[in-house]
Every structure is written in C-alpha cells, then in structure tokens.
Length: 187
Image (cartoon, rainbow, N blue to C red):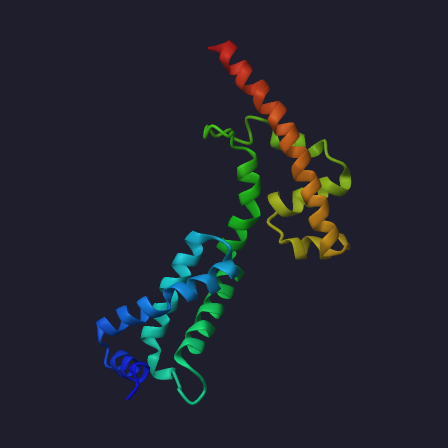
C-alpha cells in the first residue's frame, strides 16, 4: 500500500492526524490555486479551510480510478473559490473596496463619504462616467451587469471606471485637504 493510499484509508477512518498530514502536504499548493481565483488573502484562507473540511467530510467520494488525490483536492479548491467569488457578500466587498480606499486618507484617519460630499463629486463627472459609478458603487451592479445595462462593451466599462476613479481621487484629495483645514480652524 502506497503512502497516499494509506493516507486516504486513514482519512476514511476519520483519523485526525491524517487530516493534519493532508493539510501539511497540500495546503501550500491549494492556497495558491484559491488565491489566484479570489485575489484576497483573507478570503483565500477561509476558502482553504472550507476545502479541507469538504475533503474530510466527502473523502468517501474520492475515486482513485478517476485521478490522483491532489487533482481531486484541486477541483474542490477551484469550485470552492469560484463559489466564494460568486457569493453576494464577496461581490459586494469587491465593488466597494476601491471606493472605500478612495475615501480614507493615507494617515489612517477615515473620512466619511457624507462629510466630503461623495454624491456631489460624482455628480460633477461626465454623464458616461457618472452613470457607471452610480450603477457600480451606489446600486451594486457588477461590471458585466453595468455593461449590459448601458449597452457598451465590458472593456469600455473598465476604462471609464478607471478614469472616473482617478478623477474622484484627485477631487477627493482636494476636498479632503479643504475638510481637514476647515476642521483645524473650527477647533
């Protein structure tokens, strides 16, 4: 009996040390697979835990005739990562991350969007850019959904959003400086 066969047999017998060995042997490679899909280390770590939990619970479904153990684990990891990316909470986090980064000053002091007039700044953008920012950041559309709603190619959406975010960064930078200076003189 090979080491892999022995490991699989021990997993089927619910030997916790076998799960530990499985994790030690494959976690690094599987983490890389997951991270390439989810692109966020925190999410990748959570998905990786889910992968090993699924493998532990479903080891009976592993069929050595269909492929190696590693291939089976990669398929579980890939599917779990795709599920995570498709989940509503992940998509919402991805949609708002760049905007949240945009409204926080480099020193770590947060500036609330309402205090600096986010909607007013967005309203100053050209219509073609404003529409996309409204759809993506205020209405929760994905880039694909926004492209379909506006009737333009996905690449055009990405280009316009990138331009709009650059302009908003510039405007936020100016606005944040005004807010900070004003607050210094008021107190």
